[in-house]
Length: 337
Figure 1 (cartoon, rainbow, N blue to C red):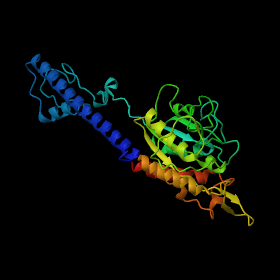
Figure 2: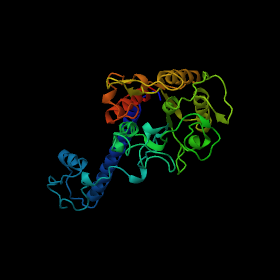
Figure 3: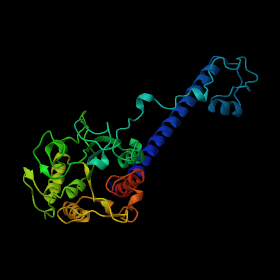
Figure 4: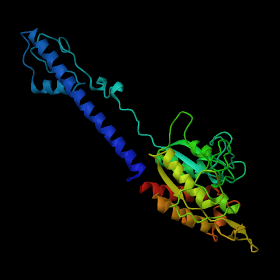
């Protein structure tokens, strides 16, 4: 998207308003013509009627005022022609009102950070609001994004605990992001498909120490059991492109993950592979660049180890203030595409 969705929406509303104003001018002109013809008809039936003054013509042209200056006429004001009140002139023909068909549908491929009860598909696992500090759906990053941009939710395909890696051919388990089940699940029940897809996954691959892998986005990945993060992430993007060729796809780097240290402040969590989460973010950045997808830098959206306590409830899951950081970072990138 070369312009922001907000600006596109304002432009669309401007064009709609312009069309309404043009139709209104036409209707007013038509009403004036009708009044003038009726006036001529009234004069033809009353040969003793004096010519109308310029003031009377202005009165007829500005429908809504009575013609009180018809002196010398045998025809009482209002008889033989009808005064049309401006307030009764139709301003817009409802049948000709253009329908708003430019809705932008958003789908999300995510994990627990993007879940909320009753807002994800049946069979997926939620985290919020029962287990986190986000009590209202309006506090989630994606709902704030929808409210701010005017996009509509197609499918929030997020499942708590899910990884990118796993069985890519699975048709029932929501815990493998690269699976056919998760990719196909971004289509709504009514058949609506997403115009925008945001991929925000990889945190659980890191926490569960799924091997990082070294696929830089240039190697094709065969379907089957995908055992490393890089291959799984590449396969996700390739399958999204095939399944939703017209959708704009955005990739998210991962927010920091911390653990409480001895001094009761957060320090970087190190997984069983001896890695911190920035290694997985680097891989997402490399793959997204190779495939030409915009990158949303959540790694540097404002949360650090030093201030993490302000934005998370457990070192991973965000509170409402942390959700705002994601919302702001996503909107900034979407607005520029």
